[in-house]
Every structure is written in C-alpha cells, then in structure tokens.
Image (cartoon, rainbow, N blue to C red; front, side, top):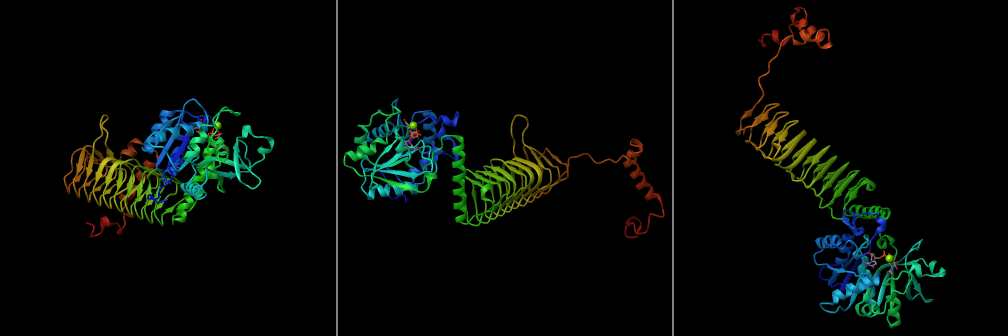
Amino acid sequence: MSPETTGPAAVIVLAAGAGTRMKSRTPKILHEIGGLSMVGHALLAARSINPLKLALVVRHERDRVAEHVSALDPEAVIVDQDEIPGTGRAVEVALKALDAEAELTGTVVVTYGDVPLLTGELLSELVATHEAQANAVTVLTAVLDDASGYGRILRAEDGTVTGIREHKDASEAEHTILEVNSGIYAFDASVLRNALTQVTTDNAQGEMYLTDVLGLARDAGGRVAAVVTQDRWQVEGANDRIQLSALGAELNRRIVESWMRAGVTVVDPSTTWIDSTVRLDEDVRLLPNTQLHGSTTVARDAVVGPDTTLTDVNVGEGAKVTRTHGSGSRIGAGASVGPFTYLRPGTVLGETGKIGAFYETKNVTIGRGSKLSHLGYAGDAEIGEDTNIGCGNITANYDGEKKHRTVIGSGVRTGSNTVFVAPVTVGDGAYSGAGAVIRKDVPAGALAVSLAAQRNAEGWVQANRPGTVSAKLAQAAQDSLLTPASNSSQSPATTEEGK
Ligand code: UD1
Ligand code: MG
C-alpha cells in the first residue's frame, strides 16, 4: 500500500499474554525470527496499511515489551490491560485509550503480536473486503487439518457467518468444524464499541471473549463475514520454541524465494539465511551456508560465501567475500575478503582492496587497492592507497591500558612479520624489512629495519648436534664445496663473469 493511501482508523495489536510455553526469561513476542522480534514483524505489517493510529496492548512484562516497541515504533500507543482477562478486555482498553482524543470512526483492525508471518497485503485485503461489503465485522479465517484449540467459525446453512465458538465452550459437533478464527479482524468502530459493553466473562475460561462481538454485531443487525486465507502460515502464532523455529524457517524460505525472484542467485536456499532487513541487488550470488543479518546490503555482481556470516556489512559491487565472519564493516567495490577472515566493527576496505586469509581487522580504514593478504591483525589503524602489507603483519594497538592508532601511508611496502607498535606513523612510499618492529615514525620513502645484524656461527650444528641428520647433511654440503672434482666449472662462483 502506498503511503498516500488512507488506511483504517486504527490497528490494535494484542500482546498482553504471558507466553508461558516458551519457557523463557524473554517475553514471548520479543523472540526473533528473520532478524526481527515477533512483535516487530506484527508492527511492520500493521504500519504497512497506514492506520491513523496504532495501539499495542501490554500486561505481561509490560516494561520490557513497551520499551522494545517504542524503540521500533515511537508513534505506537502503549495501552495497559488491567486484571480483567481476555481478548475482549484487551481491545476494550485499547479502544478507550484511542477514543480519548477523539472517538474513532470507520475501520478498526485487531491483530496479535505473536503472528509474525502476517503480511500487510493480507491485512489490506481484509480491510478492503470489510469496507467493500460494508460489514460490521470481518474475520480472517483458515481451514486447518487439526483445528483443536482454536475458536471455530459458526456458519448458517447458507454459509453466512453467525459467530465464533471457543474450543473449550464448543459442543462435540462444533469440535468437528475445521474453519478456525485467526484472531485477526476488521471491525466497524461503533459496532465494536457498543458490542464490547455487552461482553461478559460468562464462559468456560472466565474471560471477556472478543469473539462474542460477532454474535452481538449480528444481533444488532450488522453483517458479519469472513475472509478465508489459503495461506495458513500467515495466521499461525508461535507458542513454543518448536513453532518459533518452524515459523522462522518458513519466513526464511519466503525471503530467500523473493530475492531469487528479484534476480539474486541462491545456490542452496536451505542453508542460506537472510534477515527481512537485508537488501540485495540483482545479480548478487550467494553460495551455500551464507547468513546475512541486520542492515547488511550486497551490491550487484558481488559473490558472498560459502560459509559466510555478515551482520550489518555493506558489500560493494563485484566484491568477493569468502568464508568470512564479519560485522559492522564496509567492503568496497571489486574488493576481496577471505577465506577465513574475521571483520570486526569499523572495518572499511576500499575499492579493489584485499583482506586475505587468516586476517582479523577492527576499526581500520584501508584505502583503494591496498592489500593485507595473509595472516595478521590490523586494528585502530588507517592505511592509505595501493599499500601492500606483508605476510604476518600486526598492529600492536593495545599497551595494556589504552588503544593507540597506527597510520600507514599510500604506496607503502612492509616486510613479512612487521609489527607496528602504536601510536606510530609510516609515511608514503616507505618500506620495512622483514621482522621489523616499528616503534618510531617512519618518514616517507625510508626503509625501516629494526633487528640486530645477522651473525652466522659457522659449524655450530656439527659441533653442538653431532651425529644428527642435520649435522651429517651440513658436513656433506661443506665437503662438496671443498672437493675440486665436484666443484665444476658450471658453478657461477668460478666463472669469469662471477668473479
Ligand atoms: C484466541 C481466540 C480464538 C482464536 C485464537 C487464534 C478469543 C476469545 N479467542 O484464542 O478464537 O482461534 O485466538 O490464535 O479471542 N491477549 C491479550 N490479553 C488477554 C488475552 C490475550 O492481549 O487478556 C493476547 C495474547 O497476547 C495473544 C492474543 O491476545 O497475542 C491471543 O491470546 P491467546 O490466549 O493466545 O488466544 P486464545 O484465547 O487461545
Ligand atoms: Mg487465551
């Protein structure tokens, strides 16, 4: 639905229940699938139909739920349910709160905080049908193989919906009905307001049933109807962790499928997990065992995977990210990362740059075309363009108390196993020798070497390790140098040019 379309007067999301079967210290609706809490999904669906007002009814763990919801949707009105139990009471308190400013007129939609696969499309269809038919109440229903536990849809001979009977209040005959109440409805505001004044707790559970409103609306002369969905996942709630995981897998299947339709190659959908918040361009390729979370984006022609997990990472056009675990990072266009690379937050790799195998990076900006190809750590650092960091280089950024920065210029070449003891700065075009420990700034164009000169103790092995394989081979090598027959004229040391 486009933003300019006017939606219903309100959506009321019910979320006061305890969710005890989750067996969790975390409130049920805060459990996540597809990178977002269940209530987060419910809020997105509700918002997508542009209601004038959105209310969420809380009671169990109200502070944690309210804080979470307000962070996601600051405009949502948080309403506290009192000690009177039932979905009818939940809607009644929400309606009172929303009416406080000005009495609502038009359509009021009710949904649940624990039904995460419900889409805005299905909600709009419900509202459109409700309004087109000028109904008093329109209920979203589904036909299940096993309807046990649900409220059953009662219909007259001609198919007209006459009411809903809760499982615990139903007769033997009513238990055989397979059409169930999803708990999602569109109501006319004034019908709802009037009917709720007549709803009692006189039933098997001693609760105010919202479902009673259907019968009361009919008694008052209103038209009650149903929208039957074929897509049972959209009305399914998660009551325990088994259902949570089933809903999570189905949500992921839908997300992966929609990206494939949008032009993304997914080699193995069953091992590819993509949060609903991730954005991908056409012609991205995702290889098996790839997980993309949070605000991750992947630009055109990039290849991610196999065995890669990225959280809040932006992958540039045509980049390659192989067997990498990354978060909070940016990978430039045409750059390459991996295999076996750990990108920690604040890593920014420039275009066509490289962070190679067995590298860990954190809070480091690497300029265009610079390469950190093998085995090392770069943290709290800034590296210029077209610099080559040799194998095994380390930024020693932590002095035991504080972190310090390493600044390395452009066009720099560092020898293997160089250690940068921060804070330290290396100028443009500088070199370092293998094993250098850089404690002082290196000016542009200088070669930095820091190790003591090499000393060879001749004959040490034969003297100190007599009889070993090393000693025997060393002796043989020395003997061959001394024997004139084997010291042929091919040896460069004896040729004219070699002298
Ligand atoms: C309710 C319906 C039932 C329907 C089923 C679908 C009623 C009386 N029954 O069943 O017809 O088939 O949903 O799942 O409405 N909630 C509150 N306050 C309360 C009670 C519940 O906010 O006092 C919220 C819960 O957090 C939950 C939703 O309402 O999100 C449904 O509650 P739940 O107890 O799961 O549903 P049932 O009463 O079993
Ligand atoms: Mg209940």
